[in-house]
Each structure stands twice: as structure tokens, then as C-alpha cells.
Amino acid sequence: MSLVKLNIKGISYSQTQNGAYALILNEVDGDRKLPIVIGAFEAQSIAIALEEEISPPRPLTHDLFKNFADRFDIVVKQVIIHKLVDGVFYSSLICERDKIEEIIDARTSDAIALALRFQAPIFTYKNILDKAGIYLKVNPKEENEDQENQDSILMDELVANELEPNEPRKNYKGKTIEELQTLLEEAVNNEDYEKAAHIRDEISKRE
Image 1: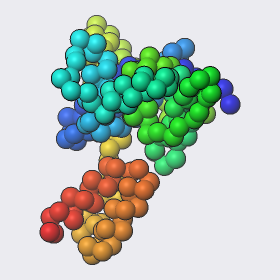
Image 2: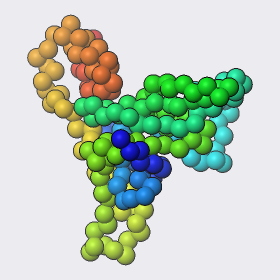
Image 3: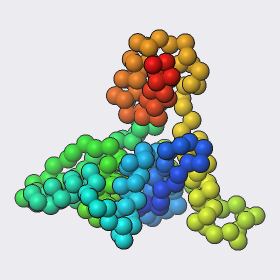
Image 4: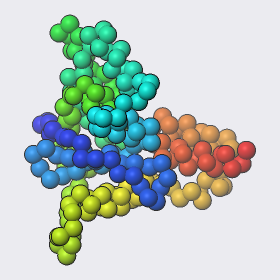
């Protein structure tokens, strides 16, 4: 399978879903975008890495990993988004130490936060981009508007759509606490953190 190189287009904050962000990756040799829903902490870490002038007073978790890797001569050579299952992206860090290459499994948001710190390229497979890639187009009637502003609007719409829960929240009302705890554990194991958040909210209401 052929690899497609990606770069970071930006991070979009959803105006309709509090604390929800979408990381938008751009196909280097094409027009498709790959949107990935990420959490607030990861969004902050990526944003800080993108803004070179911002330096936190204490190292964030990803900065700590970078410092640790530097101390022991470990280099992240590249990140590959290698799988997409039920809307969840899976990634690998391709690392090297003493000319020995290792592959480490990672959440995509963490992998990209580290790729920025190591200045490592980001790739995905063509079939994943074919499946999940989208085009963000400017409305011809508003062609005089700034492209970045138009992208921003469309990205926010995308985030809102991406974060629609697969199951209506009202479905949880008929569940017992024990059933909700089981669903919560399953959601976390599947890395479906948005679903997990809705279930956790329902549990919190009852406690």
C-alpha cells in the first residue's frame, strides 16, 4: 500500500461542542483533508508545538517525552496513521536508536504532537485517505472571502458533524448504573472517548 504524506492544516474548535477540537491534516500533493477529532489537552499540546514563540514554563507531557528521548538518543523518524476502524484512527511511531528501528503504537493525537517536536514527517495510507479524506471548497458566491476564514467555517461544521454521538443520549436513561459502567468501559477500550464522555455525564447525573 502506498503512503501519502500529510502536513498540519490547523486545529478547529467546535462552537457547538464544548472542549471538542478537530485536527485537520492536509494531503501534501493533493487537495484532500483528513479530519481527526482530538481532546483539549492534545489540541493545546499541538498548538504550542506549532507556535514556536510559545514556551510553557514547565514541560508538557509530550515535551517530557521529547526530553527523555533526546537524553537516550531516541529519534522519532516518522509517524504513520495506519488504520481506521469505526471512526478511530490508529498510528505508529517509527523510532530509531543506535541504528535499530522500532515501531511503537500510539494514539494519533499523541503521535502528531510528538512528530512536531521531532520534526518528523506524517504519513497515512492511500486507502485511509480515500475512505476518510474530504474536500473543503470555497463557495463560489463568496470567492472574495479569505480562503482561511472559509476553511475555518467549514472545519467547524465538520467538527460538529463528526462529534454527533452514534447513540442518542436519551438511550442511556433506561440503563442501570451497572450497564452504564459496562458501556463506559467498552467505549474507553475502543478509544471512543466522545461516547465515553456522554456515558460518564449520565452516570454523574445519577450519583
